[in-house]
Length: 292
Length: 292
Image (cartoon, rainbow over all chains, first blue to last red):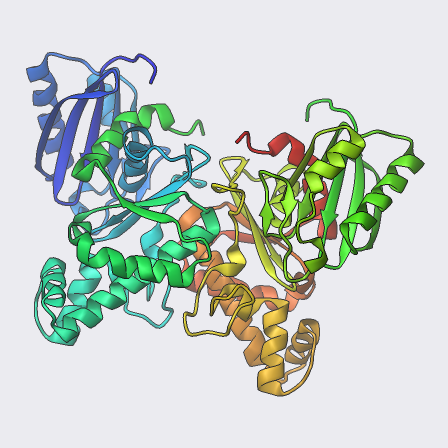
């Protein structure tokens, strides 16, 4: 990694926001707090930098899609409505006098994985959590798409007649296999309000209704990974996010489905960076941002 | 395009093989003949070059997958069993004393489209024909995958319980929507041996059974294109291949499905290069081959 000035990475999550100061590519200081709104983030960032007595040379920000990546603005996802219209790049670059870059959190996570994790040159990063997101690296470079919107693995339509998705379509992977999808299935099929992790725990304990829900989710995720394998021929698929905490139980189910649905199943691996994968990626975003 | 010596492009199709001599990026001479085996191709190439009195500086070859792209060897697809093991790169480079490059025909077609066709920087090229193949360009560069096997759009599993595919899986796009898939459906559902083009003609004429088969194929293709749109956010999807000759009838059906299954439907367009798209692409393959 080339020598560079201090860089700040910011990972705006649906629940928590993480700040990191990177010096010559190493995480030197970090902070995390519950996500509120953009003015709150600006205040926390100001305090973080003032305590460290440093001025960044660049800031990279990952946030949940949809974004206007060229303009550097958050468009507001269902989990973060108060961020709608936040001019992240304009306001942070004005305040801190340095270039600021904004990209979707799953592509940032893929960058973190590319530079600090498994470092493969052809892989897909998948977040399996409340939602399902993806970031693609091919030939050693991130795939941005025409306007920065590539990697929306959660919105592959697998079951045209399937459950409704918050995106407005039906039968998206996310509607079936995400934490939200698992919880909705539990509500509808088991008649209980359960978090996805509780459904997984019930399935592990032998509850047949919970097992059916979890098996279906794992099978859909495996089908989507097989689709990625046919299209992109990745060396591996890296997974992170809350549901991967039960990988010992869920992983074999997903792997079986990947084998059933693809001719050359890629290796599946958990990110070694844990919940910080997006923070690491945000810090290297300035070097990877496309030159549109 | 930079100045370069004479380049030969070779497109080995399931039915016809095309040879082209390109001088400074322009097609200067061409020849086409029914595909037989590798010795026959070598003989035809020898005659072609001898009549033109030229020696190529490079040769690019597109052939149906599966290939060993690093070694430059054809592994033999079901349509071309006599090519199994053909050492295309080793034998042609020895005979002609120049570098030779081999890649799958659909990725070559995408290269043809990138340099001579619509020239978008984010697009997918799809062949809709006897089989279904794909080539992906992202950020102005072809996506090869870890070993040159990316772009297998025909082998996305859309219907896990669907018809068997020649690849050994079930419910691949190709099994449902390719010419072969349409013909098989006609055999099973209409009890007739018909070519796909005949099924399309019957559907156009109002035959309800043929209409059901064609509508199903178009809907599956649209679902696959929507998956490509969510993953890669292409500016457009370019189509070629025999079934696109009925695009006036089939195109609206495919476009409707793409709109139903994707949030940001890409524009669909036919290749302006017709059946020569793969030949053009083979000629520029030497400049795009990955530096593995």
